[in-house]
Amino acid sequence: MHVAIPLYPRFTALDAVGPYTVLAFAPDVTVTFVAAATGAVVDDVGSLALTATATYADVPQPDVVLVPGGPGTLSAMADAALLDWIRQAHEHSTWTTSVCSGSFLLGAAGLLQGRRATTHWGWLSRLATVGAEPVSERVVTDGKIVTAAGVASGIDMALTLLALMRDRVTAQAVQLAIEYAPDPPFNAGHPDVAPAELREPALRLIGAA
Amino acid sequence: MHVAIPLYPRFTALDAVGPYTVLAFAPDVTVTFVAAATGAVVDDVGSLALTATATYADVPQPDVVLVPGGPGTLSAMADAALLDWIRQAHEHSTWTTSVCSGSFLLGAAGLLQGRRATTHWGWLSRLATVGAEPVSERVVTDGKIVTAAGVASGIDMALTLLALMRDRVTAQAVQLAIEYAPDPPFNAGHPDVAPAELREPALRLIGAA
Image 1 (cartoon, rainbow over the protein chains, first blue to last red):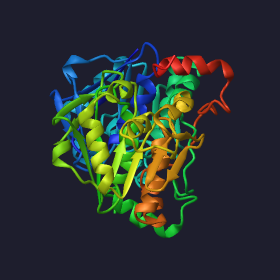
Image 2 (cartoon, rainbow over the protein chains, first blue to last red):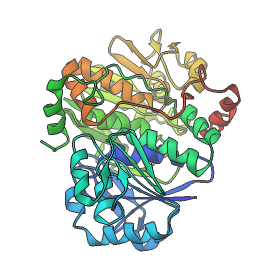
Image 3 (cartoon, rainbow over the protein chains, first blue to last red):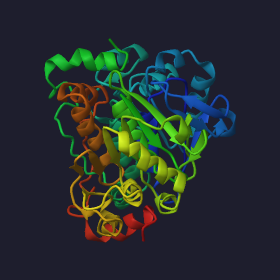
C-alpha cells in the first residue's frame, strides 16, 4: 500500500507527520513525501523543513493521497501543479484524505462537490465555498474521501484510515506502538470545551484572525 | 525562549514533531533542530528526513533541550558529540526534556542518576540501567528534567512544559489552535488497556521485540 503526502510551502508539520507516523509504522505501508520538486519544503513556522523525495510526476497513482493543511493552503489553492496531481491521483486512489485546511485543497481540486467534509474549527464554515457540506466532526468519511479536523486530528484520522485500509488489529497495534493514549493536561482542544476567551488568541496562532 | 531539538539517525519523527508543533506555535518561542552537521537527518522508517539547521556548536545554551527517541537511540547512546552537547546544554538549560527512548540519552549523558523518569512502556524497566527510577506515568517531572512516555506522549509533555515555561493560558491557546481534543477510534494506546495479544506485534513495530 503506497501513501503519498504532498508538501507545499507553509504546511503545518504535525498535519503531515502525525498521520505519517501512524501509517508508516504499519507493516507493508510505504509513505512518500512528494512536491513539485524534490528537496526540503519549509513549514508554516519557518523553522522545520521536511524533505520531499519524489516529484508529483514520480508518484502519479498512489493508493492513498493524504493532504496536510496549514497557513500555506490559501496560496496552494492557486497551485495548478498540486491541484492537478490531487485530481489525477484521486481518479485511481483507494482513499483520498486530508488534515486541517488540506480539505480546501481537495475542494479546490473539485473533489468535494456535495460531499460531507471537515476541517479546522476556525475555517469550518468556509468549507462550503469549495462545494462541501461542512460537518463538525473530528473525522468525516464520505465514500473514499476521509477528511480530518484541525492539526492533531490527523492522528485519529490515520488510525481510522488504517483500520479501513487494513484491519482494526493492525490499527490498534500501531496505536499501542506509538503509545497513543492521549492525556492532555487541559481540556481546551475544541471551542465546545475551551474557555471562550481563548478563541481569538488561538485563531491568531494559526494565522486565521 | 529558545528550544533545541537534536536529531540523530533513526529518530522517530512524531517524537520530535509533536512537541515541536506545540512549542513552535507559542508566541516568542523559537525552535531549532540541531545535529552534528547541518542537513537532512533520516528517521526510523527511512522515508522522512527533517533538516537540522544548526550544529551542536551553534546552539550551546538553549533554554530548553528536547531529545526525541526512536530505534536509533541505542546507537546514539555511543555518540559522544551528542551526549557531550546534552550534558553541557543541561548545565545552562531551564528545562531538559525527552520523549520516548530519548530519556536513555539523558541517562547516558549522566543526567538521570537517582531521578524519577519515564520512557516508552516497552523499555521502561530498562531505564534503571542508566541510573533512573523508572516511573509508569505519561509525563514525569523531576526538578528541571521532564520526560515523556512513548512517541505520542510528547504532545502531552509539550503542553505541560509550555504551561511551566509560560502559563496555562498560553498552553491552552495552543491546544485549541492545534485542535488537540484527541478522540482515538480505539482504546489501545497502553498495555493497561490494549488487548494482551497486541503487545508483541506492537513491540515488533518499534523494533523492540
